[in-house]
Length: 147
Image (cartoon, rainbow, N blue to C red):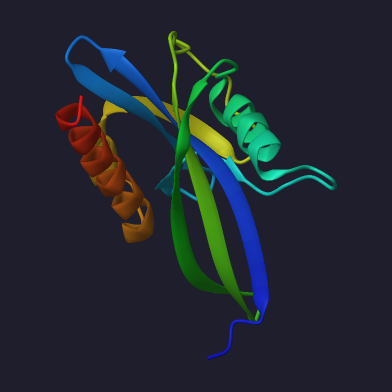
C-alpha cells in the first residue's frame, strides 16, 4: 500500500505538577477516541503557532512554559474515503502553572481530562499516542536524575 498523501500536525503536551504527581490532559474526539491535543496549521501558520492555537482551542490553556530543545514525533498511516495517508505529528512539551477547571469543548472535542501521566497513557486509544506519553515519562525520569 502506498501512502502518497502526507499530512502534518502539531501539538503541545501540557504538564501540571500536582503535589508529587505530574498530570497531563487528554481529549475525547466526537468520533469517540481519546488523544492528545493537536491540529493542522492554518495557511501561513508555523508549527509552534499551530500547537499553541490548538492547545488553547482544545483545552482552554492559554499560558504554557515550553521546554526548550525537546520534541516528540508520532507517525502513523490511515485510509479515508479510499485514499491512503501518512501523518506525522510533532509534539512540544510545556508546563502550565494553572490548569483550567473546565474547558468548553471545541469543534471536534467533546471532553477533556487531567490525569496522572500513567493513567493518561493507559486511557489513550491509539498505541502511537501511548508511546509519546511513555517517551515523555522516560524523559522526565532522566531529567530528574540529571539534576
